[in-house]
Image 1 (spheres, rainbow, N blue to C red):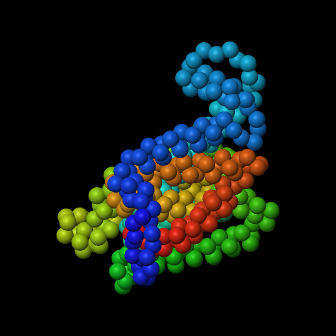
Image 2: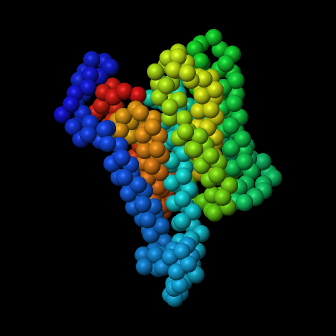
Length: 360
């Protein structure tokens, strides 16, 4: 057992296996890939409607790989597997990875372990946009996306843009200004959301369903539109590992190391906001993924962004896909409820077990 002195003077003990894994993050990566494969496979095989595992495997082999097969299953089974379960699993994996990457970026950028993808008002902006779309009498749909998704995406990006521009006018340090402005704008947007909910009448249930997050409406057209945005933003975040490591040392130190601090901060904020906005537009608001997963991975693998970013993406994908699988079994609950039930107690356990005993 190794000991680490907590920030308040208490001594926290960390198991020796955590120290061994910290020096061998590749094993954590292999375990994460295995978890993704297992959870994704279970997500396709199981659901609220029973489909024989042998039929599911045969359907996937026939439709995805082109292996000839004698059709012994009903057409409804093929629809369930290919048109409902498979896109739902892929969306859960991509959103989980995106939110985890955004969490790593914002926690490192703001040097605040409590920062998550919604700290800059992204969630409040997306929620307000979606609520307004629900109240608008005119609706449309294109490639699986409707007015709700469009205004949620626009609202999320608009909120982040306002936070960034307003924070530059403040007299505080840049990081403190961004963080406090995000909370202020988020509170203002939350008040606007409360007003729209008050005026929603019969549409209140639909707004609540969106606020809790769900993959029940996942479709191939939505993935075709949303996944490229997530991939682009995630690729940018993964490429900024060196910048994140430098910013963890402080902006002045990072500047002395040759980093263009202002440019890197803008890139990280923009990419994190982009993947968060795309995720919220596709699935609604899903909490705790971008907060808990980076915390746990950092605890095990250490703060080096070169390993922390990809490992968080892998384990975030596995975590959210598992939460969605659990949500489907009792009757398709909103996945945000499951992440809250799993994430909140686990996060409190981590804080109590290792309070202050690991660095950001």
